Image (cartoon, rainbow, N blue to C red; front, side, top):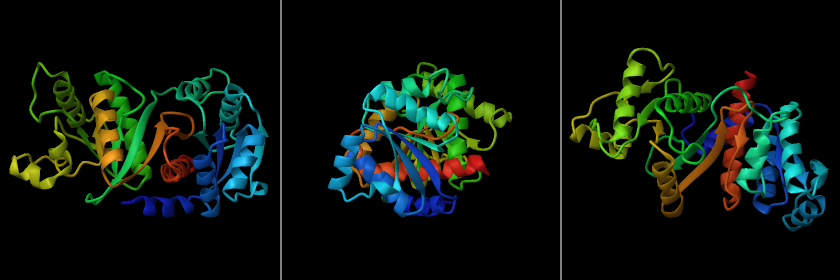
Length: 303
């Protein structure tokens, strides 16, 4: 089981070299990340975008473009669609978002002819390495789905369980996160959390353990769980934190990345191939972490 991004990167190098299709590649952190991914034996890359700008940035970071295929397409929307098409046609294993708006990127991912629809609900998984916590934590959904229904939460759990298992967690522990740990009919997330627990207990959710509602402290802090007398198998040991909505998830995500000592990687899953959906403001370390995570998932798909 990978407990850190260093371990995850090491795992990625053992999965066989993958190929990344980069949508609008003229971005310094993106080029730094794919350069490092190649040097570490994780993945090669096809750089789709404005070739002149790509070469200018590559020269500034001492990147040898002879090691990379370049598809010259200065138009952002056309470049995004071409990058997606390469993955759709299995000429690449992973799609990486470069210097373009998320809505344009996702429009290409969802394209009916060459997109990456897989007949499943898509959701976002952010994997965190947080100082003081002895394992990776999987946050979902903090960036894609807004106010998921109970049925959608089941799909989000299933997507995140696939990611956690690819990272070596045999039976991921899922905590439906709420403001409180008791069921309150006036607080719908607690009602949903109880329903998810019951579905797990009936065998309707498989491959993981689900117990909730759990407040954040009870989900990740064993001492807090013991102190409050909460003794289910997930309490204090959660791997996957299922947030009730995008507000709670995104706020938690941004507080962590801005105030705590963390490393993270981000993926859009439920797609035909791993899709790296990071912010344009993310540094190259987040992007290389995301590439390693995507390579591990791609390796699991191949297996």
